[in-house]
Length: 426
Image (cartoon, rainbow, N blue to C red; front, side, top):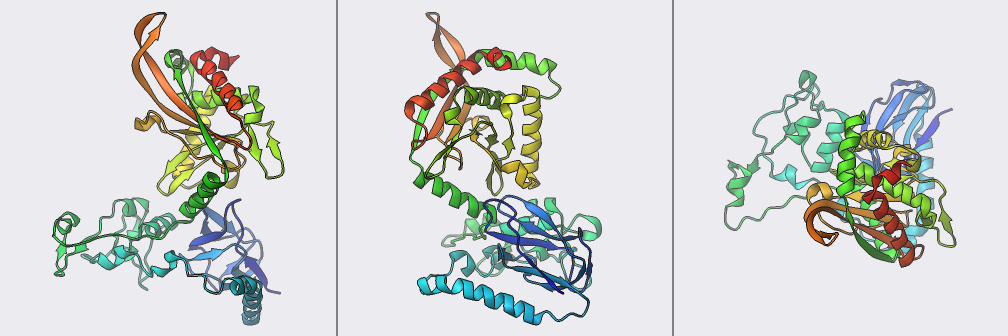
C-alpha cells in the first residue's frame, strides 16, 4: 500500500519549508535511509531521508517552492500503483480542515510576498552571455546551496556561469555574480551609469527567506509581548585584557573576550538562578541547567546556537565550541540540537566598534546580555587619571520575571568576575 509522506516539522519554530533540491524523481526506486530531498527551514538547510522502501510515485511540490508543515510532500509505494485518488483525498481533507478559517476571514488578502511573480532582478537583468551551466535538456546545474542563495537574492541561475565540475554553479559563483542592467533605451549599462541617469528610479524586491520570516515573527512577539527594561553597566576590563594574554599563551585554542563573557555570564547565572528563567504564562520556569545562546550574524539575519552547560566548561572548551558553532551557523549546517534549549543569550557587537546597544530578548529566555566594544578612555583610579579598558554591557530583562534589583545583582556579579577573571577559574 502506498505511504504518504507529510512535510515534517524540522525545527521548533518551523511552519513552512522550501524544497532546496529533490534527490529522487518520480519513478525512482527508494530505500529507507536514502536521501530524498534537501529542505530549507527557518534556520538551516537539512537533509530529509526516506523511511519507506518502494518507488517514488508522487511529488507534492516542485523544487524551489515552499510547502506548509503537514502538507503532502511525497508518496512512496509499489511500481505502477495508482495514487491519484490518494492525492485527491488528501487535498480534499486538507481543504475541509482549512475551510473554517477561510469562512472566518473571507476577505483575507494574499500575502504581499506572493504577489511578486518574479524578482525584479530577473526583469532588469540582461543576459549578456549564455551561462555554461546547463545540461542537454536545458536544466541548470547548480548545487542545492547555490540554488537556495540564488532564490533568496533573486538571481536567475540561467545567467550565472558556473565554475564547478562541468560548469556546475556553486556558492561562490552566486556570491560573486554581478548582473548587467538595462538602461531605459534598452542598451546594456553598468549599475553605476544607470544610477546617474536623471529621472530613473530603481529598486529590487526579493522573497523573504524562511529564516527572516521567523526572525521577524519571534522578535516582534518578544518585543511587543514582553515588557522590556534595560540595565547598563560599565566594566573595567584591564585585568581581563592581561589575563587573556596569559591564557592564550597556554590555551590550545585562541580565547576571545566573547568567550570570557560567556563563561562569566554562566558563572553569574549559577549565583543568580532566577535570572536563568522563562515566562510560561501561568507559571515561571527556573532552569537549573545553564545553556547560553550566542547570537551569530548570517546573511539572512541572526542564528543563536547554544553552548550547553556553559558553567561547567573551561574557557578553552567554550572557545572551541563557539568557533565551531559560528562556522556551522554561517554555512547553514546547524542541526536542531545546536539551536534549541537556550536559557540565556549573549549578543556581542563590540567587534564592529559599537560601544553600547540594547538587544531584544530571545524567547524563551527572560534576559539577553548586549556586549559593547572595549574602549580605552580616561578613568579615575586611586585618585589618579589613567587610561582604562572599559566595556559597557546592557541587560534586557522581561519585567514579568526579572525585577530591577534582581537584574542589577546579576550585573554586579558579572562585573566582579570580569574585573577579576581569576574568580571564573575557581
